[in-house]
Length: 275
Picture: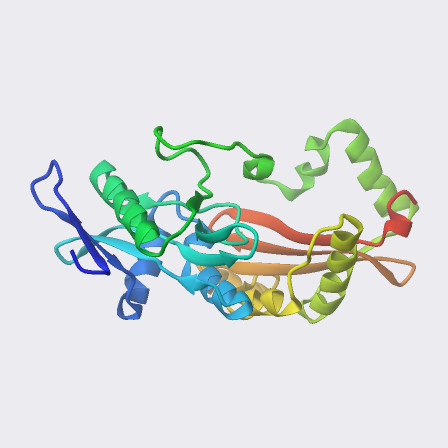
């Protein structure tokens, strides 16, 4: 095995070969994510490129092959932290990650290759943010970030599915307070400003505006009807601002991928939280 290649025997007889991702196979990677039933926005190279450019973390993505066929992927980035040391993360600033593979052999080969890579890079640990536990032998931390809600087919039914108090609050916002929702990419600066103030109130560091704009540059505007027919599995985004009497009081940057909408970066003006 070389520094960038790992081979493992399999039950099928044809070995799985794991290599560090080569940009020549970008299309193969993106195609695999789009086809895999558990593929997410965070597995795509869109997320990798934005993280790499905004934060400088090094990509160490792994690909599993049987012959010339891609049979698995493992998005990993090397994060150098002053507090935690060197860590391999799948993936930074994302809530989902981990391996996608055709079968258990490819899945296991990717983990073994990642472990060897972590040892070679002198990492403290590997942080795998998968939707569900992937390896029973590894310690697991369960978090709320995997919460999902199935939406009704008819948008008119969304309000009726909210809990009673939330439904009443939404109606008051619309009817009593006359809040206005605006979807416009040009208002990303407003969203970021509101998000930053909210994070500071929580004593948490905020992500730079550059990260937001990079993600937007590499995803389609999901609010543009002309893109709907062409977008397919291409990641998309929505920039939303809520106005009260002409003043922006809340903002949200959401991402879309396949049939999933992810409200991701949000902020609000605390003076209007209980109007």
